[in-house]
Image (cartoon, rainbow, N blue to C red; front, side, top):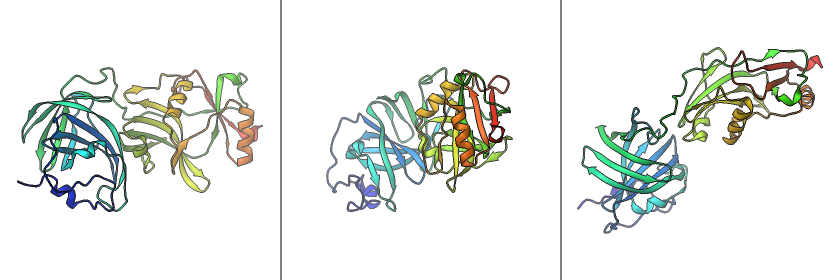
Length: 325
């Protein structure tokens, strides 16, 4: 009988990786009802989907994770069987080893098999983050597709927009009189960039709607989130950095009609802090921000009305140059 874990062992050195590498021998017997989804930050971010079957975890790599809408199928690359112990594995696979990178458990639970053949695997998942009926089917070689058979997880989810025209501040001579109605940010003097990130895959448009380069690694840090960010690319302490100051779409929810205060709260919740990107600070003291901008050699202050939507006609963004103090 063929060794179901032979390929798995050939690809791993038990002395170098923390992954479970069981010795050859009879496979354990379970109930064929465990599934796990592991988020894997390898060379490219992906999610490993594993189903317990006949003593091993039958495995697929999902570049965009499990689909949450039956209108969209996701690629599922069939990979080698894994040992059952892998269902609880989380940790850092050393760089240079097969699959090197961080592995975390994204979801796990039980499943029921409705059909299992070489041409179709149909299951019902019951996890903490994902549930419902899914089917996997091959499309050629190692490539399969995974399809959600149930209605959308969120029937009210809106698709990510293809483009959003950036709101631009109007130049003013003075800080607004009603300072308590505004948030105050530095004017960085950088290049405007709208970034679209869909489960690790990113693209960017500049302020005029032309294709631009998205910060490397930003999509991976956002993981399974689907977001549209607004910000500036500028030189910060000698390093080109994307400073994010607005969130326009989050996981199926357009936010352009939400007040700026709410958009900032949701943006802060993403915890964006990386080597080439971070959330731009916002303050409630415009005079202090202007003084700091002057000291740091920045062009000015941007005042943004807290209760306003993201709309050029209504947003009320004001650029106050520092020299007009």
